[in-house]
Length: 120
Image (cartoon, rainbow, N blue to C red; front, side, top):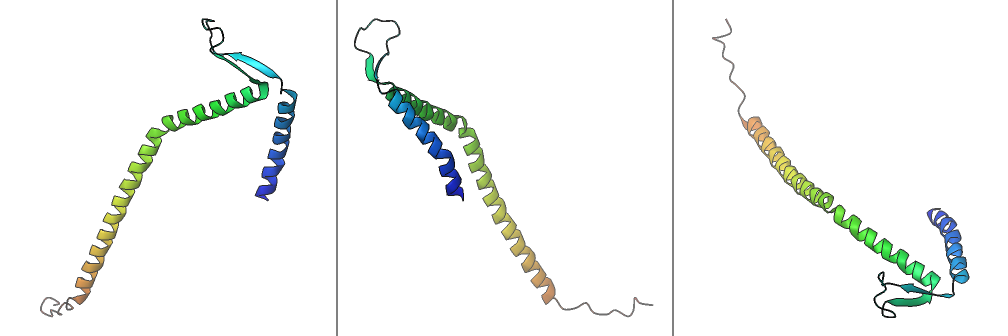
């Protein structure tokens, strides 16, 4: 069912992208020199859909990298919390073993003697 919904959403998107690419296949020039100092050195000529797809891909990569950088402190905090949890679990196991040992020692002790002198 999950695959069906994925295809239900992706098929129209793929069709729109294909139609966009076919409609914008004419060559376009993009000048990467904002000051106009270099005449032909920083000009790219390619179909418009390729330029737009490359810009989109670059935006996804830069955005993903920026999100990865921002979330670094969260990943570090998660690693530290995991280390603390591991230590606390080990301490809990050690305490549980100690309680079991003390219970066994207590069970091994002889029962208290009945002192009839204090009963009166």
